[in-house]
Structures are given as structure tokens and as C-alpha cells.
Amino acid sequence: MLIFVSLIGYLIYFNVVESETFINSPYNTRQDTFSDRVIRGKIVSSDGEVLAQTNVSEDGSEQRIYPYNNIFAHVVGYDSNGKSGLESEANFQLLTSHEFFLDQMMNEFRGQKNMGDTVVSTLDSRLQTTAYNALGDRRGAVLALEPKTGKILTMVSKPDFDPNYIAENWDTLVNDENNSSLLNRAIQGQYPPGSTFKVVTALDYFRNKGSLEGYSYLCQGSITMEEHTIRCYNGSVHGQEDFYSAFANSCNCAFADMGTSLGGKSLRETSEDLLFNKSLPLKGSRRSSFTLDKNSPTALVMQTAMGQGNTLVSPLQMALITSAVANGGILMQPYLIDRVQNSAGETVSTTQAVEYKRLMTDNEANLLGKLMKNVVDAGTASALSGRSYSVAGKTGSAEFDENGSSHSWFIGYSNVDNPDLVVAIIVENGGTGSEAAVPIAGQLFDAYYSG
Image (cartoon, rainbow, N blue to C red; front, top):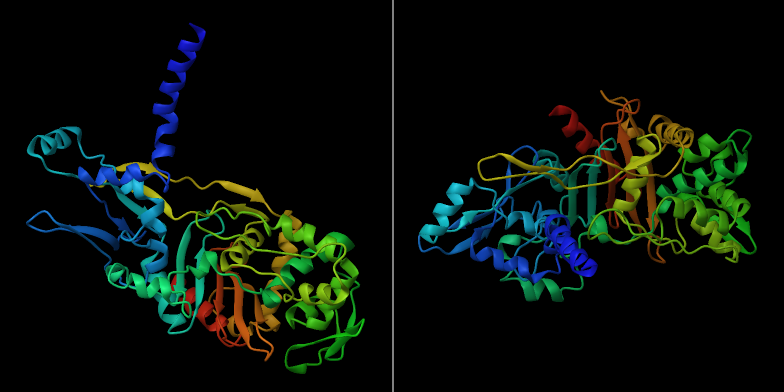
């Protein structure tokens, strides 16, 4: 009797509490059978623009339409030849109808389909379009989110594709190894972080030394340890520096010096506190990797501390670290679905902003924020200073071949005293951070505050 009662209790619990979780799994092919009685719902932006919808012709045939063509390709995704992006994440909601029950009964009596629910995303169509156009025909990614809530407002990746023609172009897309157009570089790309990693090294230095005061280094353009030489970008000679000027100047030599004093074990511990080598809190994202340990050779420690070596990151990884800095050390759970509505516009469910994890103390976040503010005020991101809003950030030039070619990075946030928007930008083969990534950040911030 006890076993029977327990079984009945579990079945009730499963159907009431857990069934939707299992049905909503992207691996559950049962979802597709819902399309026999439900017209797939819309995906819309936070400002009400339709990003995906199903058109039904007079003969009853259905066609999924993406009005913005390539602009939201990766983040909204596609619904043929498999599913990706929000089309995959929100598949269950899009194929579920919460129309008025009498209307549903009437539709079933007539043999007609019910209208699926509308998924209202966190994406801002104006900011997305700005980021897409600013990146132009270059490869790379742009990601923007709210540090206080975790709402993702922008996610652009290039090369891209037109989801309206995914079926026709499928073979070409999956076999094109040169462009990897289906890869969402914003959350799945793996890049050397370049000098953006100096945020991590700075945090580790502070945790070990207890202060940034008293650090002094004479930069002569290069540093050699155990027959391994590192040079500052373009052979720049920065002269006598304290910690703040070394960070603002993005001095490779100073950070290589710091790295050797910290060691691989310490840098690894701090990196893993910031979610390196761990799953990131967003579906479909790829974890970043950090390989140093206590036995790592000096040359590799020097390279890694300045953002080279074997470290690989996604723009999402760097956006999450920046978001924690902007939010007093607390990382909010990033999300793309703001709410779900039925076809009449009535709210079915809403995503609440929740804390994911504290990555650093409030004091540590404030200190990193000051360092990043100084980069804009008197360092490599000075092109963002003197605007109607304040910015804190860090540029990066990530070398990726033996010729010294580099990806252009920028991470940062706006309205420093009460942060509004976090951005992470990478432009492949774009040169220095100030050359390619910083101007894109400027356009994105300008668009945000002009709205």
C-alpha cells in the first residue's frame, strides 16, 4: 500500500511540477507533435518588433518568416533542419497555446489549429541593428546586457546567414569550414583574451598583495626571464609606472612581471572563481579554458598573465566578468526570454531577475571599476571619454598567429556610478582594441542613450 501511494504521489508530482521541464527539453522530439494542433507562436523583441512568425496560407500550409533576415540569425535561430537559438530554447512555449479555453474548444471542433504563445525576448531591435551595422562585414561578435538584471539586449555574430533560406542553403552552410557561419561566436567562439585578461590578473594581484599601492615597474619596452622575452605592443616604452598607469597603458611587460610573482596556481584559482573551466549560465554557451597550474613554466605564466598563452574565452565569458564588476561583484543570471504571452497579449509567465553567483567582493569590484575607468579617462580607450555618459572598460589586442596579427577586443560598461549597459566586443583580425572594437562600443552606447 505504501509503495502504491508513493507511486501515485510521484505521478501527480511529475505531471504537475516536472512534466513541463521534461517536455521542454530540446532533446524531446515529442514537442514537434504539438505542431499538429498549434500554429507556432511569434518571437518578438522587447520593443515589440516581430523577429519570427509563422504565416499560414489559404491552403493551410505554414511558413516560418524572419522579418529581420540576418540581423538576429544566431540569437533567434532557425526552425528547420533542426532548431537553434530562441527557436530551440523556447520551442515548448511557442508550440503551447494559452488561448481562451472556449476558443480552443471551438477550434478543435472545427478542426482548426490554436495559436501558439508569443515569446517576448529581452532583445532590443534598435541596439541589435546598431551593433550589426557597426560590425559591418567583419568577423566577430557583439554582446550587450544589463548588469543589474542579466537581460541580454544584443547578441550579434558574424559571418551570419539568412534563416529564411536555411533549408535551401543548409549543405553549403554546414560544409563551409572557412566561415563557420552557423557558429554563434558571441557564446561559442573561443579566442585568446588579449589584454582584457589583465582584469583577471589585476584581481589576483590584489587578492594576493592586499593592495595595489606600492607597485612600481620601469617599462623599457621588453622583459626577459629565463631566455623568454615579451614586448609591449609596437615596442612601446612606458617608463616608470605604478599599477594604475600599467593597467591604463595595457603594459605587457608589467603584467608579465606581476604574473611571475603570482604564479600559475594563484592565477588559476582566481580565474576559476570567475567561471573559467566551468559551464557558463546560458544555454548553448561554451566554457572558456585556463590551463596554468603550479608547475607551469615561467614563459607560459608571463604570456598568460598578459592575456596570451593557452587561455581561450568567449565574448560571453568576458561580458559576465564585466557585468559582475559593474554590479558590485554579483553576477546576475543572464537570460533572453523576458515573458511569454498568449495570442491576445495576456501574460502567461515572466522571467524574474535572479542572482547567479557572487564572483568577487564589492571592494574588489570597485577597485577593478576604478582601473577600467582610468583606461577610458587616460588610457587606450580614451576615444570613449568626454561623452554625455561615463564609461569604464578595457581594450585588448589578442595575437593569434606568428605574424603578430591580432583580434580587437573591448569590454566595458556605461554610466559608471550607476551602471546601465555592459558590452563585450571582438573583431577578428581587427588590430588593437582601440582601432576596431572601441568605435563599435561607442556606437552602441550612443544608441542606448539616444533612445
